[in-house]
Image (cartoon, rainbow, N blue to C red):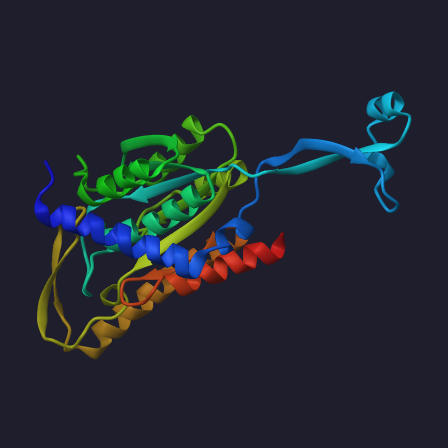
Amino acid sequence: MLSPEVMKQIRYIQLRTGRMVNELLQGSYHSAFKGQGMEFDQVREYEPGDDIRSIDWNVTARMDAPFVKQFVEEREVTVMLVVDISASGVFGSQQKLKREIAAEFAAVIAYSAIRNKDKIGLIMFSDQVELYIPPRKGRNHIWQVIRDILTFRPQHRKTDLNAGLNYLNKVIKRKAITFLISDFLAQDYEKVLRLSNRRHDLIAVPIVDPRERELPPVGLIELQDPETGQTVLVDTFNRKVRERFRRQREDYEDRLRTLFQRSGIDTIWVHTDQSYIVPLVRLFQRRGQRR
C-alpha cells in the first residue's frame, strides 16, 4: 500500500510531465525517432514524376494502366528505460534526489512514447537486475513505471551497468530506443555499452548533482560512499583538497564524454539543479535534423 506522500508525488510527476510533453515536446519526439521501416499502404494511379521502380506490375496488368505502390513509415517503436537504482541515486543537494530526477525524466519519455502509440518498457538494476516490466502501451502502464521507479526497494546497493545492459540485450530482440539513466559511477562496462548501442539505439543520460562536482568550504566533513558504506574525513577548508576533488570529477566527466562520443552514443546530461527539458528538446531536434 502506497503512502499518501508517495501517491501525491506520483500524481505530481504525472501532471508535471504530461503538461511538459503537451506544451514543449509535442512533435519533437515523433520527428526524432523513426520506426523500424516502411510498410505497404495502398496503390494509386501513376503520375508524372513518380519513381518507376514503385510501379505495381500485377495491378498495372489487371487495370491496363500504370499503378504505383505507396508506403508509409512503420511508426511503432519500442522504447526501453534502463534505470540505475543503486544506492548512489539516493543523494541530492538540491530539492530532489537523483533518483527522483530519474523518475521525472523517465516519465517524460514514457508520456512522449505513449502519445505516439509506442511501447514503453522498464529495466531497473543495481549490480543485478532488480525489476523488469515488458514493453506495453497505455496510461495505466505509465503509472506503473513511475510508481516503481519511485518506490521500488532494491535488494543490492552497488552498481553494475553490465547487468542492466546484458539483460536488455537478452530480453529485447528487436532494435529499441533505449535510455540508459544512471550516474555512471561504475567500472568495466565500456565493451557491453558499445555492443548494446550496436543492437539498439542507445542514449546515455548521466545524472549529476553539483555537490558531486565541487565541495563547499565548510570545514571538516565526513563523506560516505552510499554503495560501500566506507567513510572518509575531509577538510574542506583546505583549498588543495577541494581543487583535487574538482579535478578528479572533471577528469571523470571528460572520460565519459569521450567514451560516448567515440561509441557514437547520443547523450543528455541531466543536472539536479537545472531543467532537463532544454537539453532533451535539443537532442530531439538534432536527431530530427539527422533524419
